[in-house]
Image (cartoon, rainbow, N blue to C red; front, side):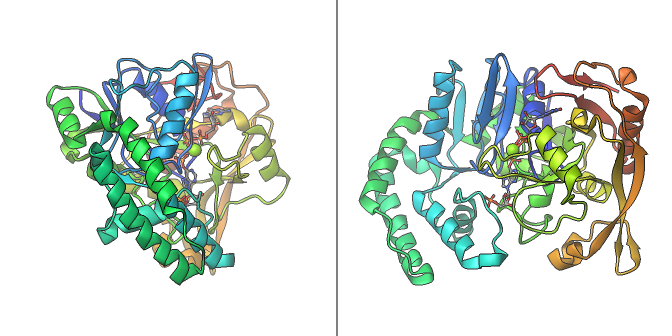
Length: 428
Ligand code: GDP
Ligand code: IMO
Ligand code: MG
């Protein structure tokens, strides 16, 4: 059985963690392919509510080998905290269960300082990053001066490389941002100690993936963030610095498209966004607040309130295209219960012209000028959390799901009706 890719189709936080947890029951390898600890993936199962940032959401299943892939960026200090969290919860995550690809890039405390400094300098134009050092680390990768996880194999040599890069970063902090240097000695000591602990987890990531696929194993690729945060195809510059789309799984893990049989787009039944940038269907009034309250829309990583709005089918058609979705996992349908009516954006009005295609390539100002053209559907009152069959949904909820399928041109094969592992309608 070959590869399944799970991706977010909006601006992140669609419920990828819980969908990956569902698929992981049948997986041999679960691999993160992009991003770092900017992600916050929630899994509610077996009496745990886990907030995972870098460790794949398959970690609850003992048969699944979890890989932090070569396309990711790893903060060793934060990863050790996450391992300690799992240990405290009694969830095994030793080096027999979890692997780190040697090609992954390393986030240093100075990358985080540079992230914060750059955001402060942008002022009103700030991206609203998670300040986890993601952008500066991918920038160093592209500059070809970054550190790779492979270097942790030799902690002493790694410590030397950390010292050199911290010196460069301290120069930038001073010259570009007029900020004091970070304590290089303390950073080097922390990273040397972390390397000693993490060295046993290192593997050749593409060798693990290649062997798994050659053996007919089922590879599950876990996307972080969402398609609209993609560096190339998202709402630039209000994006992250990695590819969260399906193509990112191929480049981040190192395998070819012929292995991919399913691309599952995780889609929230409404829209949310954390961070800055245009958001055509955003609701700044009571309905938006209601979605935030009922849906508990607060960031898993930063605790920030998420901006909330109606579902946007212009976005979803676009992200279905750029990911090549074969199916949709629709989450949080239960959150919409009790709303008298629901709106879905089916097109935009841009200066009096109707636009069907998400006009993202023209930039943020163009998107900000887009007014959603809404279709209104009836709401429903019933609590959906106990429903396990699509036929048993209230007629209005069924019609809402059917409409999403038609607008996206992709079948909805899973429907989330609550955060718990069991709270899901499976199949069509
Ligand atoms: P991710 O980043 O895509 O993994 O999503 P997050 O974990 O950041 O945010 C999704 C939130 O919605 C989490 O708190 C989940 O527990 C919760 N969630 C996921 N699916 C459902 C659902 O179907 N219904 C409800 N009510 N909550 C859900
Ligand atoms: P998961 O995997 C939602 C957003 C930030 C900011 C932009 C850039 O949980 O869906 P970065 O720190 O990556 O440089 O920030 O991207 N962002 C996310 N938003 N969910 C995420 O991850 C996100 N990861 C980054 O809010 O707007
Ligand atoms: Mg999240």
